[in-house]
Image (tube, rainbow, N blue to C red; front, side, top):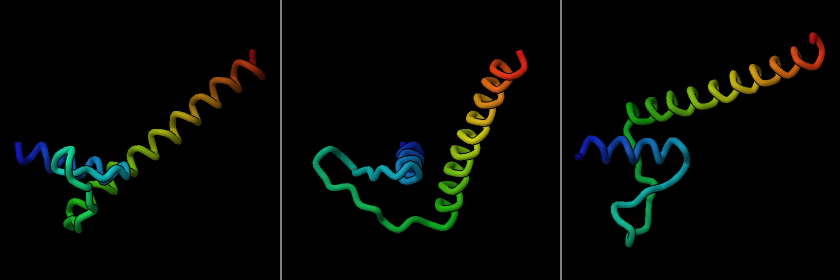
Length: 69
């Protein structure tokens, strides 16, 4: 369970949502290790690249339908 909790905290930190231990505590941004920073950066980079590629495909599909049909 400890590994799952670590990944949950890392993912929450990646997407900018602080997470606490339970519902009663205040979430804090504690310092994280460099390896966790690199993993978070990889998650964030993948997410941005996915959105850019998706937008390009949508625009290309619409351009094909509008101009080359």
